[in-house]
Length: 313
Length: 273
Ligand SMILES: Cc1ncc(C[n+]2csc(CCOP(=O)(O)OP(=O)(O)O)c2C)c(N)n1
Ligand SMILES: [Mg+2]
Image (cartoon, chains in turn green, cyan):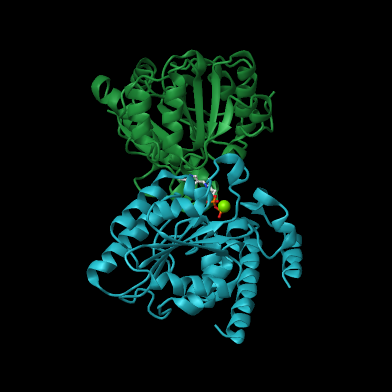
């Protein structure tokens, strides 16, 4: 149904449909509507879809104000601006004041590609995860995003939606049933768990296939909601396999690795390794180049999986 | 400026535009519009006004330029290359892996870049800090900065404006690239800047409004700005986004970041005459 569509197109059309049915939904852009697939909403909903210009912190607090009138604003921009430039406003106007605002960040991590280091947010999840009560969701594919958006509207509270905006491989089929607060078992296995998010889910599927050829049975869990993390799913899988690799398009400090480790260290410590950005800034290049350079390929996941398996007691 | 100087700087502007088109054309995509709109200002600064030494990019006491609208890096790279900071052939490496010329200016990578930028609004504050530091050091440097008109929607720009006025930074000379366009449309339809000159002057700056593609007017405005005592200066450059290439100018806000095919590149060079 969403084949060959860019994620931003799916985002734009699902939001459009929801705005038609739910008059509370508002979309606030900050001069990146064309980039984020939200420009056309203004034709249909000129009052509820608008731009506040290049003024991200203003946008976040404006959204908080509108939420006080019962609106449900989605503020959309690139991840670095959605978090770094709005951080205090998200903390105080939005989250501390319990305003029902949704923040959408596109082009996460290395997916900013030619916009380069200044536009690569390696820290957005880490920054927001330490703000109380934030829900942090990272979409994997079009099917998941389309199911997630209505649930995010139904959820009364602040949600950060982190998403790739171009074409991405389909991971979930039409039979997929999304639950905002439940992790997805993408593939069952018994030897090692690959906890993956965002664009790294597709990469871990390739890794699991490679591992299979070597007789290693990997389980893949998609942690789409990094906060609050589905503790039960993490514990259940890690205690079954006894070895864990996390795979994320984010700094390994503060993101998925940290969230998974926080659960495991309390409940069932197992050998663990993290694939992701190893605490450095980004740079201009295409995703494939950066995946290789930053050791985020399926082959790297395979090597990490073997290492944690070898450390099992 | 005498006639020959004017003609030389105009020729230079045309040459820089060719370099920009080739640089971005080689890659196939980039921030064309906002690069082409600032060419004359860069040319007057780097070939006439600034006290700089390409052989010693970090020369103490040099004048500095902070491109706050950092996405126009390709324009500045063309000027720096032509001025001898690095080889012109390096322009072909724009935005390819491991390049020293990333789409947004990076002071750790490119000789001659005085400040990293890319998150709009920050560069002008950095320029205020540099100008304040230069005052303390009494090195008589001039600090230049350039913001976009869309960029002026960032609150930080106005925080910087107030600080510069408070510190009486008459060594700080700013430019607004007033091309009337941002990404989602015209500045007027997105968030109108209103009477921009009055805004800057009410924030305590000495303001001039000129044709941003007139090298003589730019040169004169800088000379005027240098005479101002106790105030920073803002030169509002009325410009055309995509200036110099008619088919790119006609694209309006769509020329902000645009694909440039080999056909487009050849056509642009032909139209640039
Ligand atoms: C803080 C921040 N928000 C958003 C962007 C994305 N962005 C890059 S350029 C641009 C439009 C800039 O418009 P303007 O300042 O008028 O520049 P120009 O027309 O000269 O290209 C935007 C929104 C950014 N780089 N930084
Ligand atoms: Mg502009």
